[in-house]
Image (cartoon, rainbow over all chains, first blue to last red):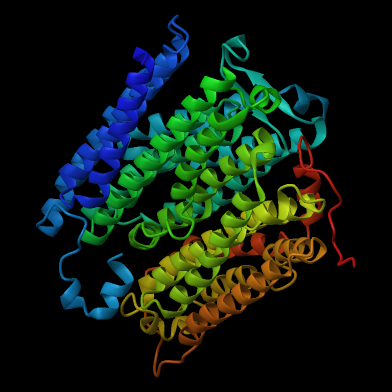
Length: 112
Length: 497
């Protein structure tokens, strides 16, 4: 098994783990971490692609660099938003408080 | 006209709103005048670009003089030009509305106004850049820019519902873009180019390209909110401030749909199997029915409008079974693009008028808007006109678009998609009339007072008027669409058997 293939498979594994956590975990911090794990998996696949012919290809590496910049700013926004969500609702999940108080109709409409 | 042909408009449709966004952020207190001026200039550049493409054919600009594959090019064909023009028209209407919506003395309103303008202009930058980019990776960057500014705009409302809606929107958006990036990486791995045109010409062999297109499509479908991935859309769109809801429903979901069209019709039509096309069409049909039913039963006014977006997005996906690999392809293709334009203007008008209606009503439920027709006749008229286009009654743009889709369905012998169109239209009529019935319920005594400046009412009406008039100028729009389009065949205006 070549190194590039190992990196590629590890990347695919990370994407799967991150996707699982993003769907299953409820805490916002864990969800944000999960997105980052998916992102790192994608970056790893791209790095593996850059190495596939032995000579490093700069284009996928440049794509990863841009991707990291985007991931950092997106994570910053997500963390700031998570803090605001916790301040406003009292919990760091995607569930809205007071759904029960608003009645079934409101829950049906707004919660999902 | 020769001077217009010489103008390099392509960089300006991106640079103008970007400059305005930075300027309105720096000059915090004067964000609004800067924003309005930028909106007018950007809209003018966008509309001029459409004229330029219509007269002079496909426009291409080599940024920095580099050229693909080394540089990142900008390109506008008929499809791009129509999308930029649509953004210009809706953007101008929303800007006028926003200038009145966020006007107000107290602290929260000032805060919202000062941040609305830079974020909205940034969103406009991202939209225009996405529509004119000739590079699949640059499209990823604009997609992220679009997502992040859209999320921040939703969070402006600062209510618990808006904040959780924005959070969910952000997580889904990030996942969608990462899938897109994965696909772009794999595509580069097989074709070693990132330029849309060169990708279209390069042979895309076998499984890697199929997996790449699969990842790209999955990401974009998630971002376009196709059923059953629509779960994030109603909470985000319904809880945002009214001008933001309008932009999200009218324009932002169209950006990822535009990329889907680019990939499946321009880059790799040969990879599209009948199974895939029918699957996308089937999900679209489910979206039409599910969105329609939910819009009919939703209790809050803005949720009705948001679920209507879910349904209308469903129609757009009928372009895949009707347009890909069919001899009547161009008919379905024209109908779908026309529906993108018609829905953008009509839905923007509907969200804008809903925002004005909610200011005058007792609560945000559909039953709370009784008496609106007395207090806000112009806005009620705008809502009804927008509904006419969403239902698809002549002479609206929605009618022309659905007519073309219907013809394509019947001419290619796939009558079951025509059934979806008809049932969807009936549902649209039902949920529109449900809202209008409440609006026209007369309340005893004086109509409720509303702090609704005229700009709030007339900008919505203007957009609804555009949606209605679109049906009358549909053939001009379709002529523009044909510039550089890869789909061939006749546009069937009448049913042929």
